[in-house]
Image 1 (cartoon, rainbow, N blue to C red):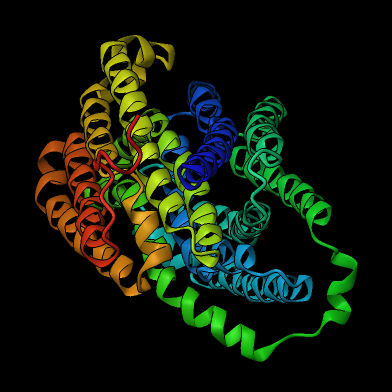
Image 2: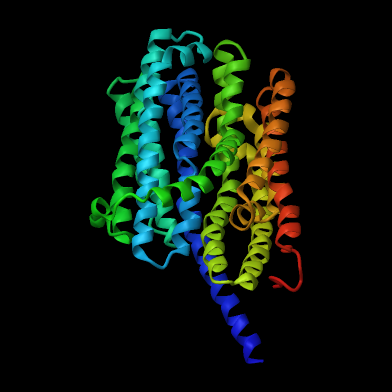
Length: 448
């Protein structure tokens, strides 16, 4: 009896930590809503073509950051919670910072060098090619800043501290971007203003992220801690297979935006990319719920795994799945019912995005029934399972994009993206069941 009571208490404690962390992560990710609220402002101040170019380059840099992060944002979630020795923790942090800083700078330099080729790839009718090249070369410096913010905030999450990044991701990264965009447009910088606003807001976020990390890690010891090549090799061995998997997840979000601009000729391509970006950003409210649980489940599972807490892992897995489904059904119904009102708030230019919005919301809702299976596979199984799942989903999305985008525009892109997500997130549900014997719908595990 005492053993059962002790196990129940442990499960309740793990549930409490998980739900609290997910709630805080949810608040942090609501910055996506603030960003969506800025869309009508950007459209009004900068025009649909410049906004479409911004959406395309934003997508391009976000995909590139999936490479420059080197999988270290995921590796930190696995290694840091499992260490009891503070020296090992700092060495892991040093490996992550050194590798990603170098990769981010090299990535920015590559974008600068190949800016003319990228500019020719992007369709922007009425845009002078020299002007576009200049924008790309300026905006390239967003890449190391973006990489830094992602990795630094991942360091904090690895400490199982899920709330402190809220002010950074919500206010400094999102609200300041809108504020600077307005100021620069009023000052007459309508050509570069939107891009410079993003760079400045990301620079402030990166500085504050470093200050935040210093609260949970003794950064003064980093110069003397010594770089551990063996640990670096171990982390890279884990992280590099995760890098394509992370990159593939970025492809699911951003590749349709890029391909809409490439496949559809002229200014229509930029406009279609902008419309899909609006639908994707609004539907990302659903993704906010999924990511909030993902950010919490990954480090907590690694923590419990290191201590042999298999029952606690099973309980969190099942409990989080039930919560996700409950929240997802309510939110999806509300968004579909209010889709026209939501798009009206963004202005008349956004109305054609309604069909794409419904498709993306239903696609994301479908993935909620798989729970946090992708995060469980990342932590409990070989990283190559995650890579294989992502590749299969990406191939499905790519094939559908090829056949649907030209005829159906943003709606076709939404169908392709939804299908890819369902495949890549549905397969882990069965892999976790086979490899780890965990099933989120078991009455024994996570029953409410």
